[in-house]
Length: 296
Ligand code: G1P
View 1: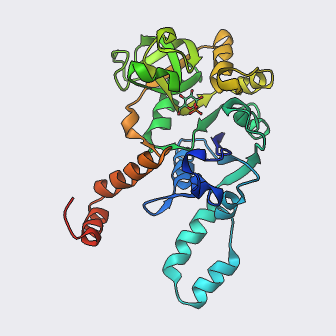
View 2: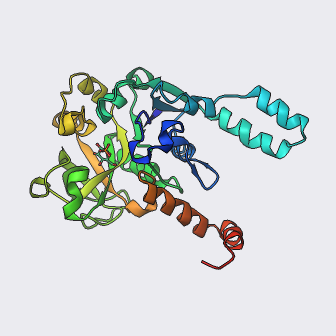
View 3: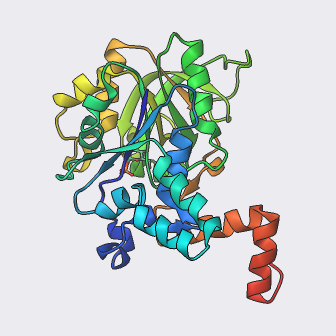
């Protein structure tokens, strides 16, 4: 089973840095954002490969996950063996690449992974966001298993005036895998989907539940993406193909606490994620306070 990670965007929100460094390689504390996403993608049982959907304009991402014998030899020669483990560990991660050179939207990006996915279900993890404890995909897998392997997407509540920035779902609450029935916006709630709409105007949004960027999907969606016409913003939207999938198959959503994940999509969000991870780790926090010369 594969996990797809779309990462072909140009990172315009981070220009001019992204002229030469892909935003996926920006470090969060001590490793690049994309490594957190890859490690999260590989956590669910059955996922054997993370497939990064990259652009040929960003060969640095592939380079990051490649073996570098010359670097390792150099480190060993200079007795920096403590660094060798980290360098070899990254290259050992089961990561492969496909390419999307024409940025036609998220649905088009996901379609580039069709040959890798084959006829198995697959995960999609959007790369601007990662979940440090890796629990979100596991919760989705549990819901899928409780419903005959159906597709499951993670959703969270958002203020009503922000719904037009996201994909929004409609659905009916059903019991969660633990047997409890929760309120529609309560983390842990499970909804049987009745609709999905990409970037609706507030008056057209059926709920305040937005798609956070974690999907566990049936391979049928790849067939639907092949004929998907452009939608919101003139882009081929994954949400539109999922809306068509819903006409053929049952689908579910699990409500998550959006704050259990870290959004790195804007400079302010990226800085906040660094601060959060530092504050959550007592050793890092102590070292940080020492550098800063005061307590935080
Ligand atoms: C994409 C999806 C949208 C989802 C969002 C989460 O939108 O199309 O459904 O809610 O990611 O970040 P984008 O951010 O690419 O406009």
